[in-house]
Length: 412
Image 1 (tube, rainbow, N blue to C red):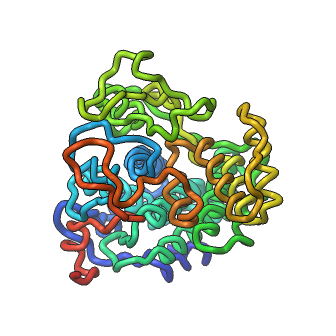
Image 2: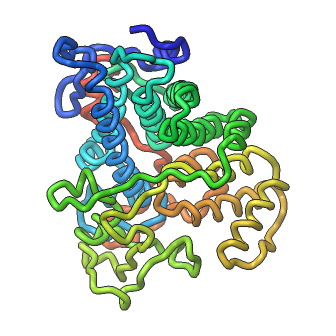
């Protein structure tokens, strides 16, 4: 297959496909498909949308479990495996972790990579490449933000920087081809990738490049995932936050977010008739940011780009954005300290109100641990009886099944 060099270069960073792993987490190697049964032109579009849907479904899981881990929400259910996330003490053998977090993200990476391996016409402008490179880039980015180590396609162990480099390379593919395609859909995806690349550059300690990408995002840009209410397929097609609020009673608003701010809408226990799944979880405050199975979920926006740009600059630019976001949401003028650390903490505070339950805090915490407030504090009691105290994890381990069944990862 002849793709532009900017795509083929990704293989040098972590996309080399090796023998597929076996066991529960087996992800079929895209290269073992019988190519004679596939018409690349006819298959590319549905396969690329399937890859997008896989990442969309994985995003719901990542955002929910990440909300528990980073203190945006309380685990209002009994499953010990899910309470491990609220306690920042996730075992590698945790089955909820394996099934709900690692497998969907691995599936998203594999299904999007499959399309990039197809030989399609007009590769320099083909929108199927734009779509799949965008969501493969985000698959690598979310893995880098959430996991201490990663692995894809049964390949070798990846360090955080390896995952970020692969995210950047895929975003570059999407931006280049999407810009050349020039259709509205391709342009939207290119801008999604531009926000993603800015985020990946910032996470990898390259603020100058992050700033350039963030400033290039068009004013007013926003891209959201759309969901459906299909009672037979809610786990894949519906908004995860509402599903686990309404159907299961698993998500309770953490005390730090029970504030008077339009960015964190919620209902107090006396304002609704839902019950927490765990009677020991205390009062059940339900989120209203995603109040239905079809509520859209923001993925990339100019607002996120503005936060990236501000963080990549100085306290002067950060204070300007802080002032704008406080004014836009009815908060008083910031009157705190103006040293660099204090301003960055306030910037993170405003960002986490703007992007509550959207999966932003995990990467922010790993990048700026001293400036992200209201994380579950190591060693303090868990909010429910019968559990050990809060742990000290800062990222997820690689699941046991991935390590055991991947021949390219050495035993511990």
